[in-house]
Image 1 (cartoon, rainbow, N blue to C red):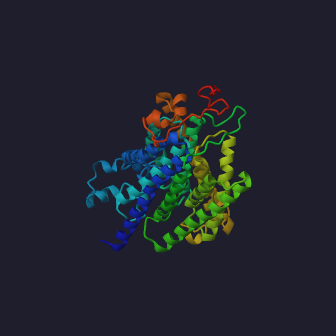
Image 2: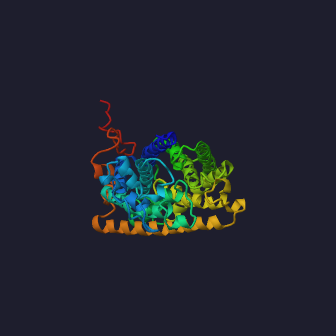
Image 3: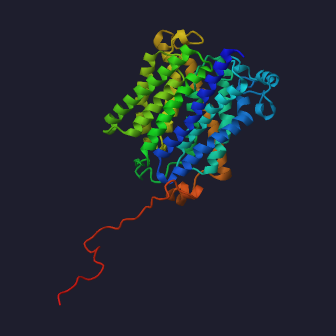
Length: 447
């Protein structure tokens, strides 16, 4: 076998495993940023969602996304793993159905697995945004719909050789295709669900609802940061030593600068270096660099990350004021910075690394690439938000989407799962202490 194919395949599979491991990171961040009474529910959603993603993407999504067909969806190879025996002859025949992936020479199943873990990431983004009030099985049904239909259809436009790709739209590793898609789907879910009980006062002012375990949140952030070194460099789908080295550094640099600016911004706006904002700053920088990571210099990645760290803090505050209740800041991280990162391709790209040899606006290339990026942002937003809103409303009408008031107050762990993440922790009501509280019997008298 060709040594290059072996090296490329190993690289693709290892980086895909890193992206798969990001599911643990999302589970830790989301559960840590939410209250202890909902920890089991959030962990279970993040655990099950990858299984659902596998089923939905295998069942229909991969063919819709990468199959040959119209500029809007694939129509060939919709059931690739249903009957293929993966012998060389069969694999070659099936490979012909996915012309949009012929640019990489790794085996078909390696391509499938790499794209699957990206699809699963988009689905799990939704989990945190709708946390602490959504019905478990309603979320599962939506996860199947997004992975089988919504994500793949828009993905065909972008990565499957569809109409956006023909317009010059570029999204190297998924600021729009993964993160904004997850964000727009989450926004539709939040609007259908409404805010959590107690989040807003009668006068509209928001109340802080702190997460129960920032240690867990920080562990999750480190896992995600690690996973991003598979997410972005792995999107080369080849062991190109020059490209993957530069992409690793642009990815890391953006995260580092975003951490710094998010921390500084939180001090200036909130008076303290809020750890939650710092964690989301790191993730915002990683999301923002995901689309341009292969097309920009390390210096540009520093600027992109620095801006993302500022944007995410302002965005969290903005959504609170708009009464859009997002318990973990998923919209600010994935939606807002996914849009920002996508536009950064049109601003910071340099022709030496661009497939169309075009420069971004800041490097003398004019607005051509920026226009293509803006078209992609608007098109993906309209499609994903509309399809997701229809899906959420249908689920609401058929099976409901929100748990009862009593269940939400008690916690979804007991109501939805019948157990608790912390069964040894007992909440005790403390009675007010008064002067007579200790007088169990009259004071003795002298006799």
